[in-house]
Amino acid sequence: MFPKAIEFRNFLSLLNDILTLQQKMEDDPILYKELKQMMNPLQIQDLSKFFPMEHIPDRKELRNTMKAVNMDVILNENASKSKTSKNPWYDKITSNYTKYDLKGFKTDEQFSNMIDDSNHTFYAAHCKYFLTLDDKCHYKASKVYSELGIATKVMKPKQFFEEMK
Image 1 (cartoon, one colour):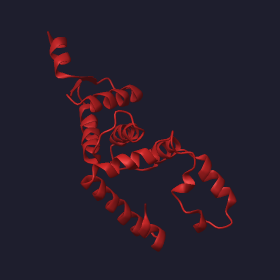
Image 2 (image 1 turned 120 degrees about the vertical axis):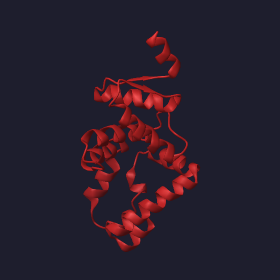
Image 3 (image 1 turned 180 degrees about the horizontal axis):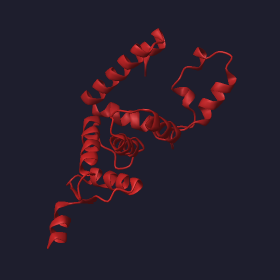
């Protein structure tokens, strides 16, 4: 999955691999779908299949730790450490939205759709209502707002007009 990072063992190579992966996912929606399937916590029992163990000789403890960790742990720990914005709510909202998508909850077919919808979910969190026709976005935004205690109501336009009557 990260050939340059394995070969050159530096951060720049890892970033190049991640950028390449993102570009490939935008070009080929099936790749994004396959990545989500690989990352599904119900399907992953052992993360060592992602990391070649031959590169970690004589480190039995590390190997055992990698086998014990699941994707929920990784997503939660990295979400709290990585900062993509100075606004902490941006990170909380978009990370939770992405987490639900990667875990398979009303998942998007294309990576770029998921990114756009996570941004829409963030911006709508500053409003009283979030109107969307997208069932997948509606579901994930509702879950994110509920989990984070955000009062924004996620609605379909028809629901909104009924409420306004």
